[in-house]
Image 1: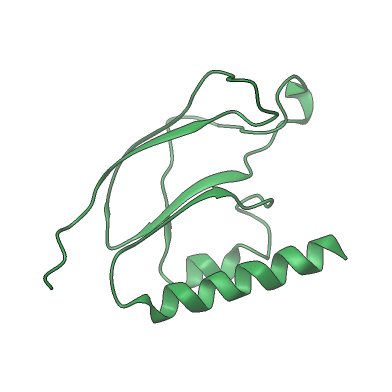
Image 2: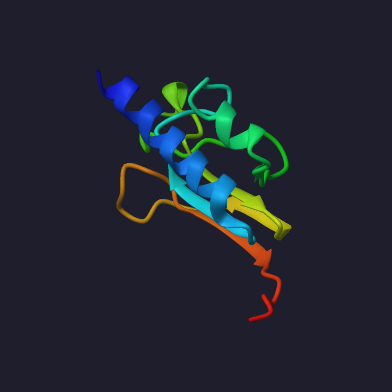
Length: 107
């Protein structure tokens, strides 16, 4: 049931991305790995994953044999810079950092 709710939520986010008409940054805990079918519509909508060198994982802290990356930074129309996973700060997720170049939008 929760997996379906997450799939539906990400489908709604995909519709927002498609309607945006301007650069998009989507960052956070998607509760899904990039190979999850729930994330595929976001990638099909033109969002690009920022990646780091090597394999990264963001959850769960303290259980590294089970760790996967479910926290992501996806962009569309934004120059992607460096992405990295940071040290533990007290959450059950590792924080991530993404350096981006946001284009100026004419008004």
